[in-house]
Length: 325
Ligand SMILES: NC(=O)c1ccc[n+]([C@@H]2O[C@H](COP(=O)([O-])OP(=O)(O)OC[C@H]3O[C@@H](n4cnc5c(N)ncnc54)[C@H](OP(=O)(O)O)[C@@H]3O)[C@@H](O)[C@H]2O)c1
Image 1 (cartoon, protein in one colour):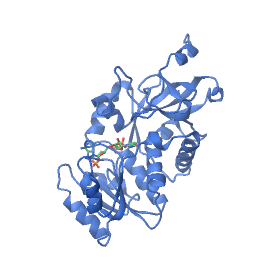
Image 2: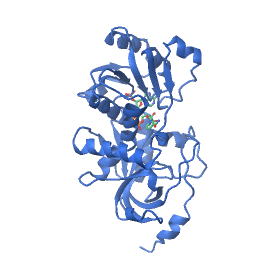
Image 3: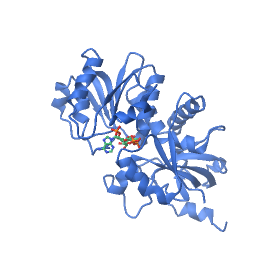
């Protein structure tokens, strides 16, 4: 009450991507946030690994109701949405791009939709586009019990691929039940050679077609050694620190393999692409083909605890902050 919605919209800054390239502009929406998603990404902007001009509002993912829209997006007003936008979601209200937002279908809760959004879209592009999995493929998924990892495993299984999951402790193995075909434990600080050996044994000496590695610094070389000839290493995260540079000669030695470092921004490039990915993820959630483990923290004040838990490898799925006024 008393808010001048149109002046809030016109005073918002221009959109940018988190990593360089500008996001194509679209009409903006004023969203009253019910939940903010907590992602490992938020710890990178907080620590300065991903640089943002100061001061900034943390958070890149949220869910709520659209209160107002710029011309061209009026039909969004009153709708329930989830969004991935770098304008700051740890707040009661956010101004976000229409082309970074998705409508939440009837029957799906806002919290569940948020639980499957950034991580779900990421798992979708990794398994459908970066390396499109088929039933003849075997994949290795690192941090398999994490928010993104669990969804990568489930989508790989939906594609009938064989899945080997890696987790950081025995205690996380039950989380992989029904989501992987085989599992390997790699404890913090442990030598990685036994993982390479186990993966080789599990694949008759061949190695895997693709490794989805979100751990980065500590595991990138191990992941290269787990690949079969002409396999693909997908380095999509920095949980242990940024992955090291890989020389062209190292790619030849590893078996003429491919390495890519993708980000979600570049895989939801058009309205059609976002609608395709979000549509499939939401449908799979509604049909119980995908399951997200969502844990709610009661308020914005819980953000520091949530960050500490995610950095200390204590989380078991998706964390969201409840923001209802
Ligand atoms: N490129 C993209 O488009 C994109 C999009 C979304 C997320 N991501 C990346 O995907 C990763 C997972 O994100 P998430 O939000 O779903 O988090 P998460 O997987 O729930 O949590 C990170 C997990 O990484 C593992 N890990 C291994 N070494 C670690 C270390 N030194 N410090 C902390 N964790 C370590 C831990 O699992 P174990 O204890 O089982 O090893 C931990 O639970 C992040 O690196 C994130 O940046 C990338």
